[in-house]
Length: 220
Image (cartoon, rainbow, N blue to C red):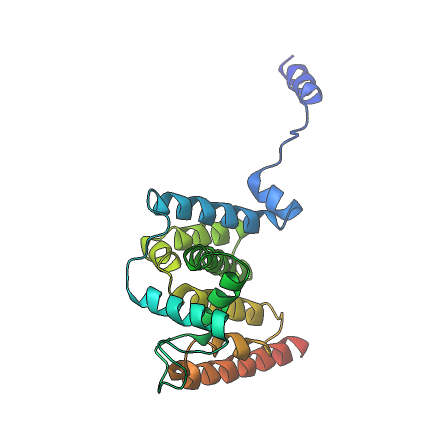
């Protein structure tokens, strides 16, 4: 009787229409990237309340002056054309700010949008990097812990280029590890500042060499 009861229960059991989260990731590989983006946006919004357009340091406003002058005059200057030296630590960051300004956005909003985008890049880069070796859930949890870090949120919303550099760097490393290419990374990474170019070139060649060795090993 017990066996008959168990048999009937199994026959009457309906299949689960809602797969587990791990199974959902297998079905929808874009799901972790969407979650990382939504969590980053929600955390940044909470962090910015109630003063969304303030910045914690004066270096941000130095970038703003350079970006505004670049957008309005086409020259990279702080006070006047031809002044010696450049006070900006990232030509790429200033250029992106100037593009936003040209499109009609305020420099404050442009900086916040770029920072949040960079935070998303960091999270997705961490996930891609870890997911090549670890289960999707472990990789996703690690990526969320990174982007929810107070330091990461502060950098993302500080109006500085720090997290853009980190986000592009993580994208380069993840792309290299996952064999998505390693030839385009130097343009992005070396754009941060002249003082970092030597280290960036060394990192570029190191990643390229390791990528070639890894591909040769797998091919053999």
